[in-house]
Image (cartoon, rainbow, N blue to C red):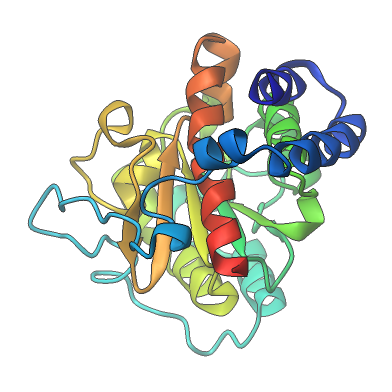
Amino acid sequence: MAEEKQLTLFEHGDAEDSMVEQMNLWSAEAESNQSTAQAIPSWSAAAHISAPVAVPLSAHPKGLWETSVVRAPDLPDLDAVAREAKECRRCKLGGMRKNAVPGEGNPHARIMFVGEGPGADEDAQGRPFVGAAGRVLDKLIASMGLKREDVFIGNVVKCRPPGNRVPAPDEVEACMPYLARQIELIDPDILVILGATALKALVDPNASITRMRGKWLERSGIRIMPTFHPAALLRDTSKKALVWEDMKKVRACMKDFEA
């Protein structure tokens, strides 16, 4: 019953109200051995078993952000990355944007969310996930008992592709040094990949989000959870339950780190 209420909060609730009720629900859940057993998977610290690592899908198991990407070590912090991204003209998107969208959030975040790229609202405001998909993400974050300022939110490309099309390979390649550097600087415990474009860029160019969502991966000591992009949930509301299942795994993993 508690999990059903949690999913309802994610689907319908106001972000601020969701978080307050969510914390109450989790407190009640902790008092139930059965609920706790369901919330903690068999690979958790309680079972003294490490999280599973999925078998790599291609000959590039480390992902683009660990292999072919040229680092930017001259950018000492996230503010420097943001400044550089805002001046960037490495690809044609730099000449089409209104505002670059470097990303925002806690520089020491334990959880980092990475999506595809900015949309029209993000391009106008220079902030990630502030449109309709962003409101879905806000509810999801709140339903996990977190706030936007607790996490870091970014995208594979920092400038809006025209018409919200999928970023071209050369655009992803040009922008990846910024995201790679952000990941290095933040060094999150968990990286939540939102959608197919981010999965292909960060993990494997042949990966399928439908096949890989909900499965733990690991790169450089960072646990990675692929799931559907919030925009996909707007198009197909049946995916909300699947994303919530993925986020329950992330929540259980967070508890493991706290143990």
